[in-house]
Amino acid sequence: MTFLLAFLKDKRYTLLFALLTLLVLCISFLLYHLPLQAVVYPCIVCAAIGLGFLCMEYLQAAKRHRQMQKLLQSEQILRDMLPDAETVESNDDYALIIKLLDDLQAQKLRADEKFQDMMDYYTVWVHQIKTPIASMKLSLQNEDSAQARRLSAELFRIEQYVGMVLAFLRLDSNSTDYVFRSCDLDTLLRQSVRKYAADFIGKKLTLSYEPLGRMIVTDEKWFSFVIEQLLSNAIKYTQEGGTITIGMTDDNTLFLSDTGIGIAESDLPRIFEKGYTGFNGRTDKSASGIGLYLCKRVCTQLHIDISAESEPAKGTTMRLNLSQNPFHSD
Picture 1 (tube, one colour):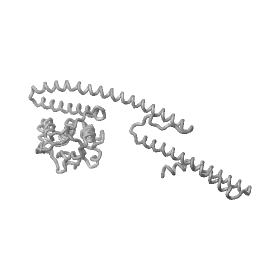
Picture 2 (cartoon, one colour):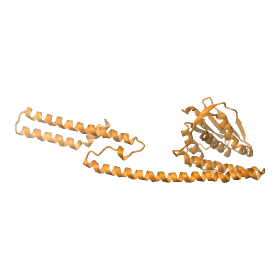
Picture 3 (cartoon, helix red, strand yellow):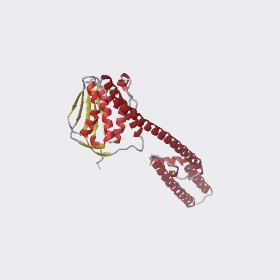
Picture 4 (tube, one colour):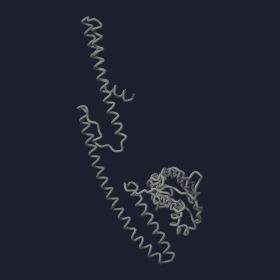
């Protein structure tokens, strides 16, 4: 109905011209004192013919409108998908649209090439930087001193940042290697916690964790990435002697709680935004605002709902709802 009204509005001058023509015809017939039947009959015939042409034009316009609406819902519009121009007036518009589509396609190709070049460079850089990191770790394994432990902790943080770079690059890549299979949740959690053993010991943190006895269908590597990011934040913002708790609720939600500094209420709705650090980020100059953003993006790919609850000076609880995962193990 909306399109019909818009069509009639667009044809208002044509309809007005037709009505005026019929009116002139009627007046001319009446001035020559022709019978009423001779006046009405030609008017009805002309009106019927005009209405028929109008209906045909409306059907064509409606078909074209449906095609254009379908195109608007498409993720990508190609020139071959456009309907042909039907009038002389639309030829110029059609040519302009074709030119814009060609320019847009050319720009997209250039952008894809630049993105791929960046991906190739940083992927190579990530793998190259792992070699000196591994070499330094081997060198430090032979030393047992406070300085060696401190350097090992810093190397671990460097490894984390390198992993975040690789994760950030792979998120929008067509080659992201998600492999969903059945995994033992406790095994994944223990592996992640074990990586942070030195941080737990260094800050005298208490870990409250009981085996959960759950199997989940997920991508092991990316799920572990999320857990490690959440653990890293919990350790970073929990004061010495604090407690970190890992558990599962009855509704199949995994939670990770800490007794740290918490998150301001005004910051809580935006913590998953890229680059947003909030009050804690302004206090801790090393915060990048990327970790939780990556967690949110990865959880979306894994069909896991991630949320946060926090109270300043009392701690933060991160929740992963595992009940939404639609995948099945191979």
